[in-house]
Image (cartoon, rainbow over all chains, first blue to last red; front, side):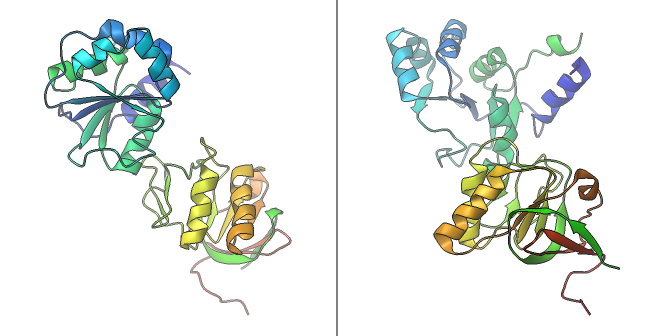
Length: 145
Length: 147
């Protein structure tokens, strides 16, 4: 495993081109408690009205995250949590979602085949920034060294 | 000219069909549409091919154990491969074949062959699988053209 192979894997996990974005989706496998904590610290303000923001997790982790206060920033941001399933396993994706963004390799890998949607792979920070901006925005600085 | 490969039948059975071959492992969950039999893993070399009725040869399954459930549903829908050949023992495919026989009285053979033999397989060959795990490969078009 070296930097060129990581770069290539990152490239392959994104399909299509451009900045268009309909949905940011996090949590495949289910979003963890530690991830909710990290997400809460990244969220400021509100998502762009054209970009939905969805987190999939288990009922138990959602409950613990709520109790820890980590869902309040997500509520304020305009995000939603769906429990005990994911967009790949349930027909829950609105048909108008043509392009989604995720930090989940699993979502990124399987979304094109299972959902027929385009996908952008980015870090958690990239996902949050893009949801707020209303368009894909990725920090390339890590990858261009 | 026919060629015979001696395999080990994990799930014995008889089948024949055109070979669909890849050196890349395949997850049926997320990688196979049980409604149509199409391979839908868009990053897999066999993406877009219909595996229904083919003798599918992949080294082994990849990822989720839900491969078994998707393959089982494919047997019910009539979209499953005619047989699956692997280059190593593969429990996800075999489990689907065994449970399908139990639930639907319909199944498909799963045969493991040496990786050296696996490397000689090409898509488009006609393959015939016998219950003892013997595979007969003939070049060219599919169809029953045995003497």
